[in-house]
Length: 462
Ligand code: PM9
Image (tube, rainbow, N blue to C red; front, top):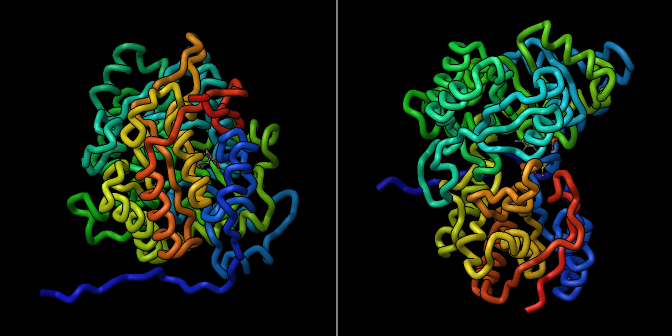
């Protein structure tokens, strides 16, 4: 039998940031003060912060060095042109529209393409993406495969578009009412689940037949590329860099939040192939974000971003270690019998709150309550990804009731160690053993839009 050989992260640690463990009493007080919303906690009250993998990555020594050579010229910054080159080299898009982060790109894209009454098919909603589509007068329609809504389905490409559903939307509304389809790579709300290259290619072909643009949300395309390499026939010997470029080749453009794959703390971009569209985007950019050669970023941000984009594909070991760490935590939980979304996704482990707390109906916000209980147990901060995140239907005023009622534990890149993952798993196992004690919540404050960010709750007295 071949001897087992472990792998480890392809880096060593040069700088550390101390973190503090609090007492259970302190955490009980902190979560009550935060209205039982993990977004409203102070980070100094958090021990292991798995709220998000967005903007929380550790930069490399090369990225820190890049900050010093950032060109802060208002117009025509050298750092912008470095970023243009990096995006073209790694993603293959020629027209770059820099923004302060992903939602800035979504805003500009939605404003230039969507007319009131338009329909935008996508593979499961993302909060900010859908907000901007609706804000521009459009309506999002979910055409992801059914398997994506089933946490226990082991289908390897749960991020795929269901092409029959897409065809039905085209037949019902007509291609002229569909300005673009929004194809998210490694679908966040489904649990970090990838699409296959075959599905990307087929969706792009269908779009071309109907003259509909295909725009990627390429925020986590790197992790999607990794799964294609691991799971799809014909890709095992292709590099992550090659696979990523092929993914992007099946699109007319992309929005990217650089706070994820790209290894920076702030930044993003809209990338396009068509110069006319890019010109329209730039005309709005100067009103909402900043000049066309910086968008919402400083010169040093763009310099660190250009370096991060190249770094993420410089060796396949980077993404292997990143996804490997997420899988390590996921496997510990699966072994302990904790209900989680399977297969384990690329950027985090998603607890199935519906299965863990069957005594709470969805309108008692089980995932929100479980997130709060986890924080109180061990100081681990996760995020609700269920009914609170889904918001309300603007026409009926009713909650959207998503099938997935999840707590997300997103792992920042290059930040935590295997020991941190062990501590997180132990805390989740403890909370799971005491799950009967977790009660429901109700709103004390509910914002109209993107309510999960700022909503406040209180426990329902039993
Ligand atoms: N994602 C996340 O934690 C941060 C904000 S929502 C809590 O997962 C996708 C797929 C994302 C995403 C942000 C954005 C928006 C677009 N698409 O946060 O504006 O996961 O940079 O990007 C978050 P920005």
